[in-house]
Image 1 (cartoon, helix red, strand yellow):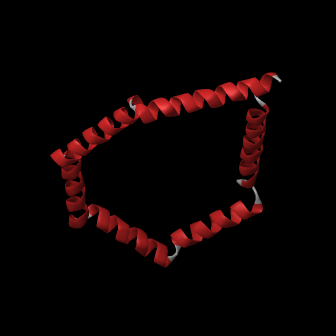
Image 2 (tube, rainbow, N blue to C red):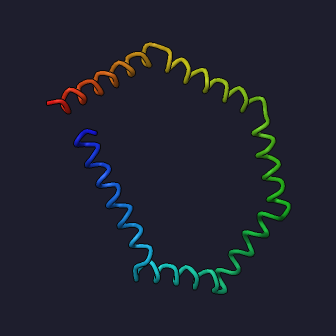
Length: 116
């Protein structure tokens, strides 16, 4: 493992430890309490009711149906196919070959530095 990889792993583990510790800290408790207060307040209850009405009402059903129709439409199918073709062309074309060579060169140069 290279020195850079060790440093990244060390940083990542320290960050995760810090985040885990922050979950139990005073600031986290205050934030949770504030969120709970906002949810249980009159304004919070009204907002939740409005969202529920919107989601379960006629407008929500029409929006879901429209999204379903859009997902199932021929246009979206063609767009997906075009995106797949573009990715395949990128991967298999000249740009993809050059990118693979550049990555290989980077890996080889990093491996050479680790040996010294």
